[in-house]
Amino acid sequence: MRTNKFKLSLFLISSMALGCATQNFSKKIESSDVDLLKEESLMRYNTNRLETMDGMEKDFISKALLACHQKKFMKGMTILEQEMHQNKTNAFYWNALGTCYSLNKDYQKALFYYDLGVEALPMIKDQNKVLAEATLANNIGLIHLNFHRYNEAYDSFKRANTLLPNFFTPEFNIAQLYIEFNENDKALEILKRLQTKNPDDIDTLYSLSLIYYRKNDMDKSFSAISRVKSDYLNRPDIVGLYAYNLMKKNRLTEAREIIEKRLYADEYNQRNKFLLEEINLKIKEQSKLEKK
Image (cartoon, rainbow, N blue to C red; front, side, top):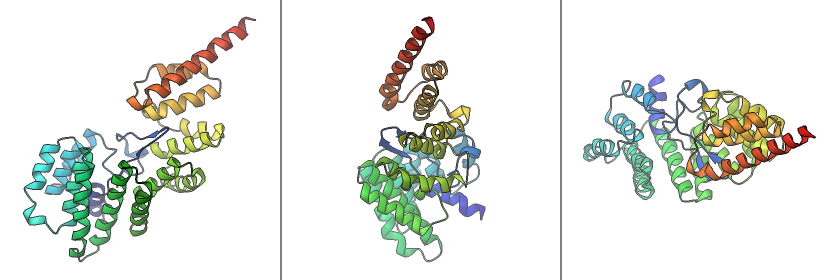
């Protein structure tokens, strides 16, 4: 059973970066205690966790995927290309090659190889066919997201979820699509269900906080974001939402400090800069009132 789960972690690749206003997830979560998708996704794993897994699994597909996740793309693709002749009808092989190209942001080639994996599905005669089909559907959905083909992405995630209803990654991706298009109640229904599986998952808590913020329920928004482990409050998406919640609680000094001490990804620089300006303005206004 453990072996099957580990194989799924190698093949069912999740990405939570959808590009909406405040939604862009980190791929690095070191602690499995706060990682709902730890059995299903390598996209969020840092190098140390990947190296640990490298010692657990020795087949060529695993080695290639681990290399590509560590951004050693030439190494990973070379491993796979050496095995191409013997694996032309292996859907998991084409999925691995597609994933390496996807991680290298060559999405056209990734989709090409994922499609070859779909064509190879009839060659699988055992229960692994469902796993392969769901994995490819989820990963094809991620490619559609990168091309902003949201309807196609939704259909792919939904198919993956239907095929493997006991796994969380496709369902989580559906929730992120709902958030992208402000279908907050639909997203909330999914996320609450996922939260029961791991109440401390970083991205679930962030998503819940974001939804409650949009619904102007700042108490629930603050409650959710406050549960994020302190080690992850330096994530550029989380720090902005956390600081905003602190500001709304009139904890202005804390809000300013948490913003000033963080480094941000490029897409968050402007947003967090504006937030810091607003916090500083409120601190000045508060100081003037105190002097009167």
